[in-house]
Length: 329
Image (cartoon, rainbow, N blue to C red):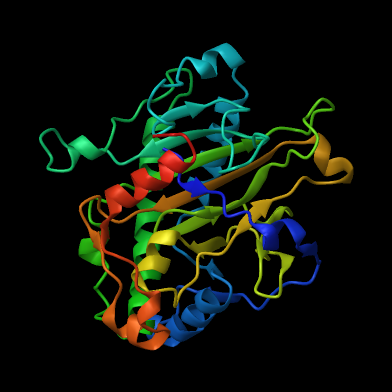
């Protein structure tokens, strides 16, 4: 399951690049959520991004996950491809280098990745929406570590959504039932060193917006992640080591009638010595439940105008619609 969709348009293609950073909130989740909710909301409304410190994901867990991710991607190509599930759209397991392309892009992204999804008990009412996970037999503790990290990501994401609910004037627990057993996906990403024979114009991740509710990203401290701001320029997204970069996805933008924006972003190729080494990161794409109806909130429609409200649609149908647009469903 690919949870990205290209948003490249004339504005994106013609945008210039600037090294200046935009006004992105950087907050600590140790603080009471009431104290940071509006700062986060302002950042998500203006730029679609924020940085979260003290997010509660243990550093030793992050370190273990990072080591295991690198160990998997260091396996021989044939061993990795044994976990590529044909016809599944990349929903689980391995997606090889040179596979994923953003919508309307002519050149593939310079990356390979592994997907971990939710594990549901037998007979669960949502089991038909989610494939079973696969796990690489070559890497000890892979399943245990990434199952633990999945849960830690989900807990951090629920805290961010609680703050968003407060900012929107909703009950602080508004999002809890919307994401319970949601179709969330954790991606282990590897951008290999830049090859001399890479296609002209290929970059590590072409301009796109995320389909899901919110994305939580570990590993953004290395330069390369950029967002397309309202000024029409690409700006670097600042992050300190160990922090989470959070961005709004299309589902949340739709729910809030555009009050919170899903911003086009990309990962550009490095220069100098950095182009000779790999880049690794771990995004967690937090999704609504497949059966959740995305109906624009009345309060947001009142603020943004009647024309901002799109027709109701289930989270599953919305996801499938977007996956078809990138030829993965």
